[in-house]
Every structure is written in structure tokens, then in C-alpha cells.
Length: 455
Image (cartoon, rainbow, N blue to C red; front, side, top):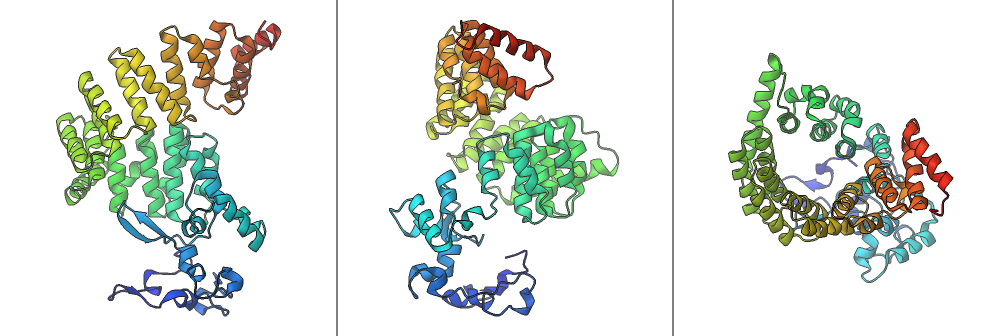
């Protein structure tokens, strides 16, 4: 809608706090049988306000455009308002990913499959093939490396909204780090400020030595949000190597960040982010104060507790770090990253059995995370529980595995147990990832010679 030139004032009266028309009359200002001249290039014309399109009786809740294309959602936990993404209902995506859809929001008790079958009857199967960003972002949410190419396609599409491209580059940075440094640099040069903002956020996941290369110019960006995000990312770069105006730009961006924090001092996420920045700047006492303030503002904010625990770890206060993780787990026991962080904290405290329990819980909560699975297996192997460790590596995992550390750990433990047939599958998977590695190729040949039955 926005890319077609629609503005807020096309629907809303700016001084009265209400929309310009009631019901479908609001939408049919533009979505009529004749193309409005102003939107001729987008062509919103058609006959929509009829049962032939809505498949619901005229005057019913299901016949209202907004109920299907702008369903009510709850934002910020308390703010119930209509979704302004203006999308068609996609219960097929609900089946795949659990995403909400308007159909089952109204038809309580009905299944996603039921809703999809109804749409098939109405419109045929073509609606399922409509382009969607959901597949790429759902794969990214599962930390699937295959998502990187799909996200890269979104960033380079040119037809996506800035918030989509910016979110995609930010996810690429989180997933791939150094491997997407060039992508981040290219995004940082986008004319769209939301894409540049995504690039600054992505840079925070690059190794410090790559950040200046990727987003150094963003500290002087015209948009304050971009400057602030760039300052946060570059704040972890111990050797800033700024020269002349570039260094002054960074200092001004930091001043913008401080102003932003002061204006949003009652927002837990703001305090948490600022605390992390202060820690990276080598100011642990101020960082601790900000993170504790974040937790006080929102005790359920897991990120602040994780950052505080890591602050204590970095400053040599292992006992406090473990205690903070334990409190975070108690507040939100179903967060896999919390259970994983707590497990690592317990390892540092030499409480290995308790650590193994937390690491295995992290795997159960997020079975697709290769790092969690690998770490849990290493911990089990370290106390002689090799069978339990190898049990974490179902041979079926090898077929789609893309993490060399996971495959390497499975191979090491499988060889120690002399489970050669199962180990071969992991070795073959690693050979596919590293086709030019002669040692892996030789290992595959040896395991094949031993026979797939392990004898």
C-alpha cells in the first residue's frame, strides 16, 4: 500500500482520530470497478464488496474487508489494533510455521488445514503459490543456513519494502557473520534508511575487525536511528581507527545514543541495549547499572539477564553469572538460549552433571540448533558418557546437516565407539561440505572399506 503511494491520510482523518468512512466504504474509495487516476500504475480496481469475492453473506463479519486483510492483533502485549500489512489470509503458512491467519482467528475451533481446503474450493490452489517472505524468515528463525540465500534474494529483490530488506540483512548477519560482510557493506549503501538500519544491526554480529569496513560511513548518516545503530555496532571495536571527521562523527553518534537512552529511560529494551554497549566500551560498572535497571523495568526480559550474566562472567564473577542465569531460567524456563547459557555457566563452575541437564534441555527446546546439540554431546563425552553423546546424533541428521562442527563431533565420538556404519553417514555429509578436504575424503574411503554394517 505504501509503495503504491497510499498514505495514512487516505484512510484516517488527521485531527479527529477516526477513519474517513465506515466499513467497506473505506476500502472502496480506491478498490472500485474503475481505476482511480492517482493509483493507475498500481491498478487497485475490481469488484470486491460482493459475496462473490468475500464468500460471506453481505453485512456479516466475514464480509468486512478489514476482518480478512487487517485482522486485529495484540502489539506490545497490551495494544490490540488492526494489522496494517494488508495481506491475504495464508492458513497454509499457519500449517507450516504456526503463523496467525484471519480465517481461524474468526472461526474458532477450526484447523489450519480446514481453512486451507476452504480457500482451495473458493480460489483453486493458486493462492498457495503467491510469493511470500515467510519461508525465508521461518528458516532463519530455525537458524537454518539454507535461509541465507533466500534472505539474500529478498535483499536484492528491489520490489520488497525497506523493512523487509532491512530485516533480511539483519538476519543474514546473525546467521552468517563474516561470510556476509560484503552483503552488509552493500546494504549500508542503500538509499533506503530502513535497509541501512538493518545493515548497522547486522554489523553487530560481524567480528569487530570487519565492522568498520562494512558500516563505517553510517556514523554520519542523515537518519539518527541509523547513526545510533552504527555507534552501537562500532562500540565493540576496540581499535576504532577513525581518522579526522570520521572519529568526530562517531562521537556525535554516541551522543545521539545517550540522548536516545535518556529519552527512553523507562524502556527495558533500551536500557538492555545500552548496557551491552557500555560493556563493549569497557565500562562494566555503568553497564551493570543499566542492565539491572532493564531487569527492574521488565523482569521477564531474558536478553537483559543474559547480558548481565555475561558481564559477570567477563569480569571474573562466575558465581554471580551462574546465579543470574539461574534466575533467568526460573523466570522463563522454556527459552532455549537461557538453558544453553546456564549450561555453559555451570560448566565454568565445574558442575558438569547439572550443566549436561541444562544443555540437553536446550536441545529439546530447540532441536534444530547445531551448536546446542554439539556442546551437549561434548559435555557428555567429557564425563565418559559416549553412548549418550552419540545418541544426540541421529544418523538422519547427516542428510541435511550444514554445520561442520556438529558433523566433526559426531565423527569423533562415532569412531571412538567403533560405530563405523553410522559414522560413515556423517563423514559423507562432511565431505559434501568440504569436497576439497583430502583427509575427509580418505576417512570416507576407510569407513566404506569397513562396511556400512560397522564390522
